[in-house]
Length: 174
Image (cartoon, rainbow, N blue to C red; front, side, top):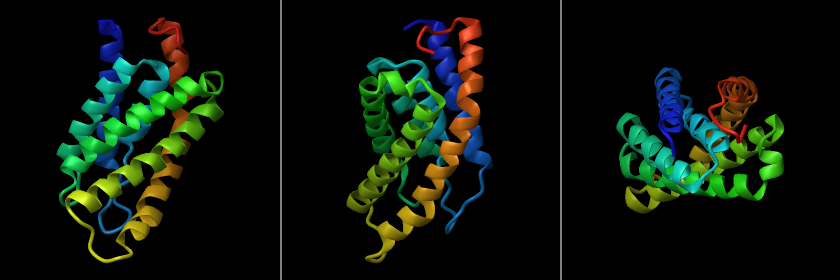
């Protein structure tokens, strides 16, 4: 992995952190995780296990530092690392389709739902959720809107970033 790839991934993670900071909360202060869209974009542009691991850890640590969910630090790290590798596996399996706007959008929607389920499960097991219906309530009110928002963001951003990276000759995977 070269420096150009690392810098490009760091820029995407940084953009995700800024987006995460400016997005307002939807339900009880819970925010959709826009860092996921940038993490998925990095995995799509640099499809390797090493890149997925690096971007998953970096995104998880930044998410942990900026989370508004009580006790969500460790679940954020767990969630991002697992999600990064699952999405990388999906990108690898669906290589032919993952490099299109529609493929990127579908992977983003699926990846965001996977991330939400892993996060809420980790919170449930590590911290605990108040009430019996908390998991399903948070899933419907935070995870699904986040999946929709991330998917729309990917539809807009993917062709632009892929075109820029192609012109800059940053990666041959675009």
